[in-house]
Each structure stands twice: as C-alpha cells, then as structure tokens.
Image 1 (spheres, rainbow, N blue to C red):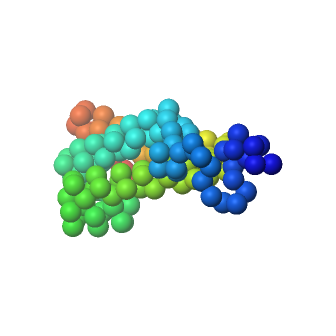
Image 2: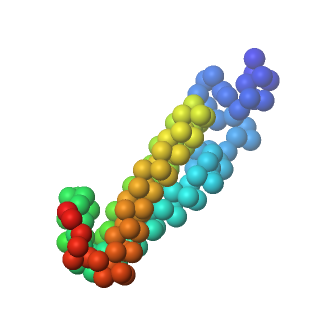
Image 3: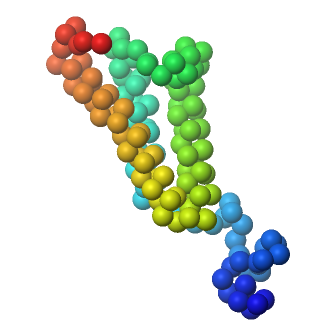
Length: 136
C-alpha cells in the first residue's frame, strides 16, 4: 500500500508524499484557458475605461462604487482580484474533478467575454459618432 501511495502521489495519512510539490508549486491545470481569461479580463478593463471616458457609465454597482472611490487603479485591482479568485477555484476543483475544473474555466472565459463584446459594440458606436442614438 505504501509503494502504491507513493507512486500515485496520494498519501492516505494526509501528509505530503516525498517528491510531491505543494499546491502553490504545481503547474496550472488549464493554462490555455487562463490565458484567454486574463486576456478578455484585460480587454474588459480597457473597454470599460474607454467607454467611461466617452460618457458611458458602469452598470455593475460594486464596480461603479470602486471606480468612484479608486479610479482606474481600483478597477484594475478589483478585476484581477476576481480573476485570481476564479483561477484558484478552478485549480482547487480541478485537482479533485478534472473535467469540472475545466468546465468552470471555460465558463469563466465565456462569461468574461460577454461584456467585452458588448463594450466593443459600444466603442464602435462611439467611434462612428452614434452615441446620441443609443437606447438604454
């Protein structure tokens, strides 16, 4: 049983197995998805800021309060704090249920891409001078 536990990296006693890396030193489970997640999150911050500077407003009440209190640095810290939290959740869940962790990571990318698409449409309208024609 001991030899089998050491090979699989699992210690039924709950202790660390010799040669196994700790949680913080393991490779990320879904690096490609995390790259996309960080990318769309950065676009979200950028597009939000451009829209705000062109007369738009933030619809997320918490983000709006953070922007009022801390401006762009606060928005950036808020956004990437949520990114870190989501990545940690995906990693913890993925260590126990690989497919569920991957599904959560894919959903994080998809959900974060939605405001980016909406923001891109608003920015195109701003660039074309059609802001006055927008319906809220």
